[in-house]
Image (cartoon, rainbow, N blue to C red; front, side, top):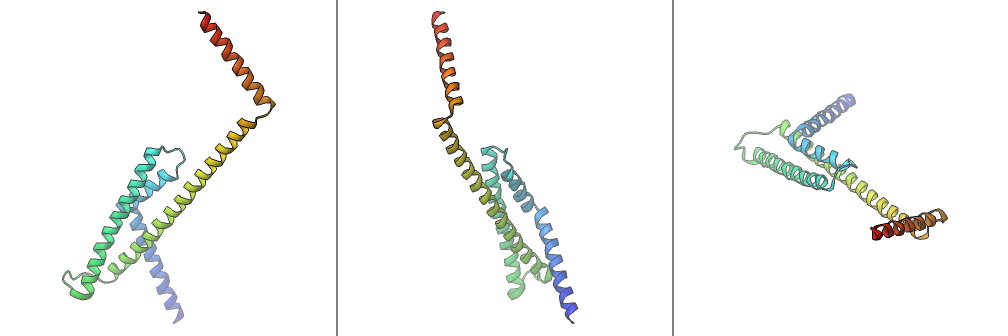
Length: 161
C-alpha cells in the first residue's frame, strides 16, 4: 500500500518536472532565460541589461496572462462547465505554472544578489584605488613626478614651435 502512494507521488513529481520543462521551452521560458543569460554575463553593456530587464518584465506579464486564462478555464470547469474543459491536465498546467513562477522568482533573486555584490565590489575597488593614489608609495610618487616633468618638457617644445 505504501509503495503505491510513493509511486503515485513520484509520478506526479516527474510529470511536474516535465511540465516545468515545457514551460522553459515555451516562448515565455525562452524569453525569460535568454534575458537571464544576458544579465548573468559580465561583458554585456548597460543597454543590453536594460533590454533584458524589459524582456523579463514582458515574460512575467505573459506568464501572468497565461495563468489568468488557465484559472478562468479552471473556474469554468469547476462551476459553470461552459467550455467543458478541465481535468488532470488543467490542474497540472496550473501547478507547473506556479512552480515556474517560483523558479523565475528564485532566478531573479540570484540576479539581484549578484548585481548587489558586483556593485559592492566595484565601490570597494574604487575606494581602494583612490586611497592608493592619494597615499601612494615612493614608486608612484616618482612616476607622477617624472610624468609631470615630461609634460613640462613637451609643453616647452610645443611653445617653441
